[in-house]
Image (cartoon, rainbow, N blue to C red):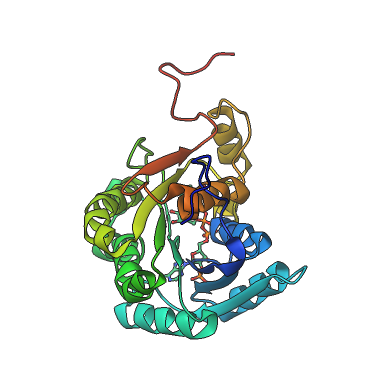
Length: 265
Ligand code: NAP
């Protein structure tokens, strides 16, 4: 990091930055990858489906953007270690891990079985922790490593019927972030979380028009968020300027969590 004579932190040189985005083949992840790639960073995206990754790389590889892909399942520890090693091989190191892969299948409490509970924690919680563990050496070697976790308002701030298991997993991510921040700090690595509200992604497609309209009505800005809104928050945490910020979370929700009473206007 460099500080100018006026005491203002210099702008981030994204062109030297090497970034891994898990769950980068669609939705918020592809938006985060686009943000970094358009700023000039070299980016690896990962996910389970090679077809989805190929399509995303084609969409992102415009105007000289440097975007690569790796097939990996974050719920599997060994797969995460291969992902980290391959990403370092492709990029020549790693400065930023965006631990974004996640699932949110709706399931009422009465219907939630062992497999449903296990799978959401395997992807959202264990997947985040495995990814950080696997990337730790590379982030330490960077000298300015950053981890940005995609959590959610659901769980840490709000409740949502049918998403109790998901909310628990997203709150668990924040518990991890705060403690991991202490362990990573001596390595010069920060870890923070972005808490998106309702973001327009492919993952919401199955919810139907009525549910989407209900979401929009609950947002004071009267629009769903865009993946780019989340990308901007992730890039703040990854920037030089955020080097002294760790263990924190930033809500990106268009004001959804603010009203004390339901809005009538
Ligand atoms: P999405 O459109 O369904 O995309 C999920 C991404 O994660 C895909 O690239 C998917 O690719 C990948 N993925 C899922 N399971 C994986 C696994 N086991 N291993 C590796 N990759 C996996 O979801 P999204 O809406 O963009 O959500 C992304 C993150 O934002 C999640 O953590 C979610 O909880 C969080 N979030 C979303 C919203 C929202 O409104 N959309 C709001 C708050 C928080 P494959 O299926 O090919 O693996």
